[in-house]
Image (tube, rainbow, N blue to C red; front, top):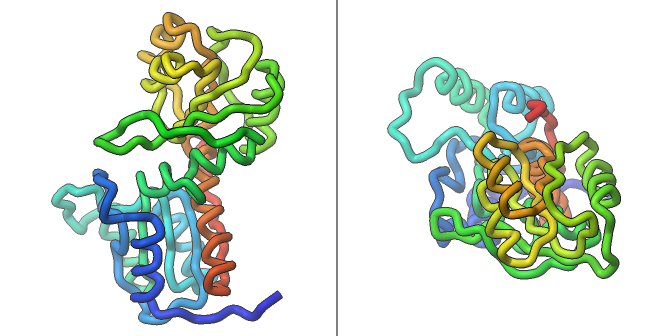
Length: 256
């Protein structure tokens, strides 16, 4: 195993900005470097959320940067008080940078949450769909061998290491699925219109129930957190190969 190397913060941030196409994807999240820490990076932590739990866990492991899907800045005029003050203080006290990639990490063709899900399930990646703020964040995917609904559910549960919820309103045999991680149940009808037998997302919602029922599509809820661990883990693997950094995933599941 090669020894870990160091890289300047500026070079790593520049690489991530280009690789994830940060500037070309509109988003509520302030994507990119959110908090500036050490000028050199050797150890990088990765997490779904920039919460006090993951910040402190990263600090205990002497990480130089925390790279997350959900950052702390969302385009509003935030006051540095209360919860925000505690998070920012913990980052600054430990001289640790914070980098966020929200929609860019959902829709990325290589390390994105949805592309990763399709590949890990053994599906062939198709075209993008599910327009969100002008960005198509989801993917259609097909399997070479038709699966039963039960087979697909087992495959998803094994991949995400969790129990899923299913609305069994669609056909019992699955050939094509639509995938949008996180909170995206409203795209189920669009997936059905595009020929999908099932739609996979993270969070459920009250309003999506009748939408799925009337569209006659199977909807599988894998959990917001669980469906969004895939991209950040894939990004960690990518940076480990690219720069020989020490990369560690910091779990902080929410149960949702």
